[in-house]
Length: 295
Image (cartoon, rainbow, N blue to C red; front, side, top):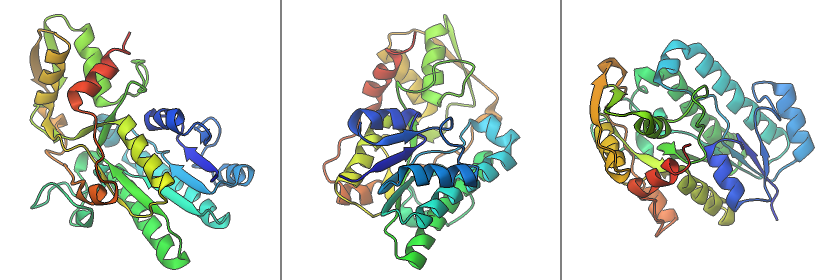
């Protein structure tokens, strides 16, 4: 059996992978600081994996991305560079990097975006540094394949949500988790930021974990988007959540400048050819999974 190492193994996707790939080695920031080359090199020396699933990244919301662009760029560039450099040094057979649809241009002529649209323009201003840093990992992986004849690949998932997200208000949580917590604590009015108009694909994180397992099991080396076909507005998602949870709240929006990118939906047609008949969890079903875990 291949020895699999998962970075960022304590995050949402990592926890779903632990359920279906229990024999893999999972490391988080406590086990290894990937911004340090010495720690990264030593971690790789100790584990000597055959396949790396690289989930680790410095992530945050729109406001944090706007406030700390240098940190988001530098930390992610270091994390990705160190793990790829170590993979080359230790002759890692397979490497799968997990990117984000934030790498795509802010605006394109045709939607949904395909893999070849990645370099048609700069990422959205609201997460410009993070988006470019993640886009750089695609360049790094392709460069390794070209120069070293490796068969590394990357997956580009849309926004994620899960019952394994942080529920502690003092920690960073993803949008859907924050939305559901706010729904649960609100009495008459649901106060949300922005206008509710932007369109987003939100995928249940367990689906990405299943795709990653298929990549491993079938030794897939192609790079492709992974995204649910549901492309909903923020307002639609809020209303679906209210209906599913039987909550009668009036939605009020404020701070329209925090809308971010209007749309960034991507096509999963390439994935469907590589992994046919894959079924994504419907948004209304996934929302219930997460809500049931909120205390």
